Amino acid sequence: MKFSSIQSEAYTIKSDCLVVTIFEGKEFSETATAIDQATDGLISRLIERGDISGKSGQSLLIPEVSGINAERVLLIGAGKKDKLTDLQFKSLHEKAIARLKDLTLNQVTFSTLELPISNNPSADKLSLAMQAIDASYYRVDGLKSKPKEQHVPAEFNFIGQVSEADLDHANALLAGIHLTKDLANAPGNVCTPSYFAKTAQDLAQDYTRITTQIIDEEEGYELGFNSFLAVGQGSEEPSKFIIMHYQGADDKDEAPIGFVGKGISFDSGGVSIKPGEGMEGMKYDMCGAASVFGVMKAAAEMNFKKNIVGIVVAAENMPDGKALKPGDILTSYSGQTIEVINTDAEGRLALCDGLSYIEKFKPQAVIDIATLTGACVVALGEHNTGLMSNDDDFAQTLLKAGKEAADKAWQLPLDEEYQAQIDSPFADMANVGGKAAGTITAACFLSRFTKNYTWAHLDIAGSAGGVFDKKKGATARPVPLLMRYLSTLS
Ligand code: BES
Ligand code: MN
Ligand code: ZN
Image: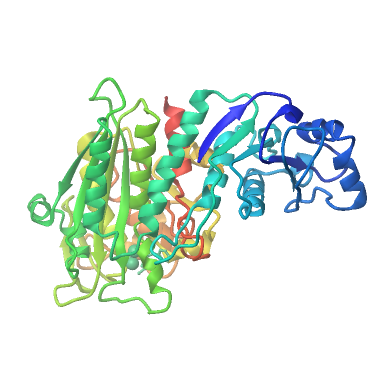
């Protein structure tokens, strides 16, 4: 699948199919006007006849058209002209692909870059369109013995002025998104902590700017990662603490942006075991880690000009005779002690050592990404990532990046008052804070390990996918948000 742009009059464009949007009410898009004129009012007649009105979600394939050079025209309803949102913009591309999927086309032309997006004037329309088209062809059935065959056009063209740099940027993001989805969707018996380690080594092989270091259990215990390693101690899969450096700045000592990803390759809950129903969804408990890999890959593909350090804390949370138990007290890498109340609150146990360790690289800011709490699914559902931070300006920067990338986050308060909920009589803190405000108390826990730098926590339990619509699989969120944030730095 190759994307490129074309700048000529719509009616002259040779194409297997030209996708044209129709607004509701008699308003015509630029290309609709041009095609209507070139075809003696064909579009007007179809609207007049009631075959299409422009309502969002409508589509009408015209299999043969005279007066223009395209073989076919696909009309797609875009709703009211001044009401089109970024997410509707994406979904009208998905609608178009759904309509064209059964045809064996080699090439498709989209005229959608001309559309105004009302809620997001600084959206990167090219990138959103490419994300939507790419996602339409993304498959989760790679492990079926006979995956259904799918025809993918070799080329997609966008009418409009697009620079090579814009195309490269959008393609780089797609490469990152792909890696994130592939890792995230892979089952727990494939995508293990060791598989993550291999992935990091592969990235270091493929990109000279990326280097990696894998800390195994033995070395991890020597360093004092007792909290992180406690999570995997009931599993046969060895835990891996993975460090990746991306050197984009000319000065290798320039302070990096830090990312820490929760990489629980499967979360059974451990001794505090989860109910069986839906437990298979806990293979997605490594979506934070998968997004860190996606960011590294996208950054490398786009030749990002700043330094990045990515840490992935990878472990499998299982119950066995050696497993962590409720009541156990752990001494974290920071020296702070933790009373384990619930072994299913394992993400924070893994993350805290990664968050403490990353300090050593003197990051200018750190973002952790984690499918951390079911409470976040309850609070925000799938549409917003939960965002908490110890720095309000940083929170605003990330919220803005999310908005612009159509990858929204919503800030929850990290007020001091919530901290008391994780007090423990036996240790410096407990790993759970009770039923109330579960997403916030999880962040309170993490905040005790991030005092020395600017930090934000992204809870992607709902937004990463896998909870609501199993067929769709992982969303690769918040990779678009994070890459948009990084782009604002250079
Ligand atoms: N991985 C889960 C959180 C989760 C739940 C992610 C649903 C995606 C969908 C996490 O490790 C967990 O089990 N959290 C517990 C915390 C509780 C024990 C304080 C939860 O949310 O129930
Ligand atoms: Mn858990
Ligand atoms: Zn978990």
